Amino acid sequence: VMNIRKVLNRLDKPEGLYPNYLNPSSGQWGQHHVSIGGLGDSFYEYLLKAWLMSDKTDEEGKKMYYDAVQAIETHLIRKSSGGLTYIAEWKGGLLEHKMGHLTCFAGGMFGLGADGAPNDKTGHHIELGAEIARTCHESYDRTSMKLGPEAFRFDGGVEAIATRQNEKYYILRPEVIETYMYMWRLTHDPKYREWGWEAVEALEKHCRVDGGYSGIRDVYNNHESHDDVQQSFFLSETLKYLYLLFSEDDLLPFEHWVFNTEAHPLPVLHKDDGNKEENHK
Image 1 (tube, rainbow, N blue to C red):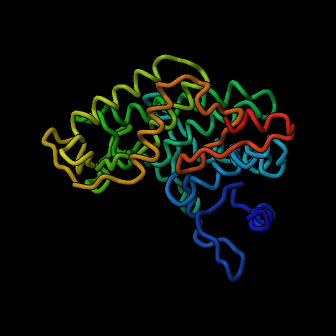
Image 2: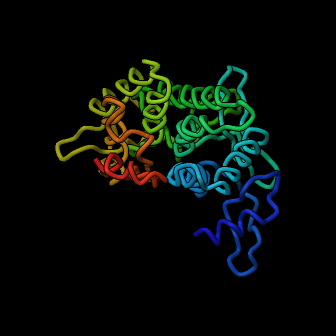
Image 3: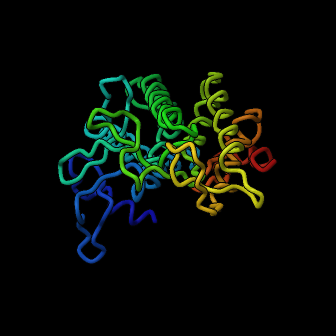
């Protein structure tokens, strides 16, 4: 894994961004599609989390992460006319003003990485995380069911709304709740728990069925149409992040644990052996 990361670090990157596709034979980028959502999300997250899990000794991971965030801010992050900050997708040099539900994890990522931000940008990264959290909350609040669509757009006069039928579904995804949890832990702003409870109430009202919880085909339609699927990540991520959101900070504290992209807690590899016993409590 580290060898692959070194190769990616050496490659010329378009505008400092990492395209989603790499040709394993040539070692060159494939089509220049950059997304912080599907296909690309975990890469950026793991640059940061590799550094955190190493007890902040993985300098290569740290530099790659903050360099990538700078490129994301410059080329992908935009603000709508209504004041909502969003992360667009980049396709061959052109922006698609669409943000996926999967991309909403980035609010928590920016917040989590704020403490090590260079050039005294800690406050800026926290604010960026807060702005992404707000935008993703708006994507929920602007639906009939108060549950977020698979993707939402900022074009054609709409903001934070899904305009295509194949983007209006909700499959119990965790990313918005994930960002609420991180931002609550980092700021203790009560709105994150309030927003989390709104999601709980919507899940109970619209997704609860006799056998568990089901996804919704169209969150803008008041008539419930269940997809009859309970995704595994609903248990491993959505409910876990909700539990942590409403728990005390000493339950799996960030200084001792790093959550992988599927919300499994992994221990920070502290340099001080004296911390080992504390880490595994």
